[in-house]
Image (cartoon, rainbow, N blue to C red):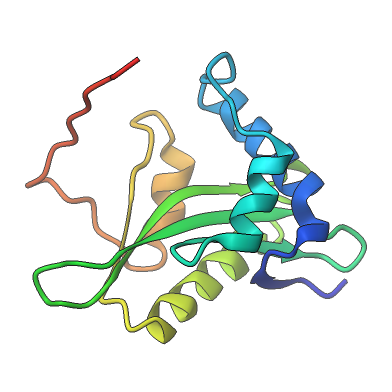
Length: 151
């Protein structure tokens, strides 16, 4: 089986949407999930700042997904990538899909001349924390996340 990461294509929309729904269920916000397949297609076709990266296993076109957006203005005048979503299909966990996806994301960031990749992890998701640490990432203790819900 050849597994590779790549930028998403319109043909990936059903698989991407399925992974997004599974992530919403895992993170307990499925009752608020409001992304349609058409929304996903619009991002792939028309966005220059939001990027969808998928892992293609050959037989299954979308077994992993990373959604990143660019934060263009930073203190060093270089973009940062904000990793918004990172999910691997449950049937493909433990076989290196996540590593391939994250390595591709790092290369993608370097090619974009980004100086950082930032993301959030659920406090209870110890598996994700361990995974990210294998790449040398650090938990930032000096910053706290605040949120204002406008609904």
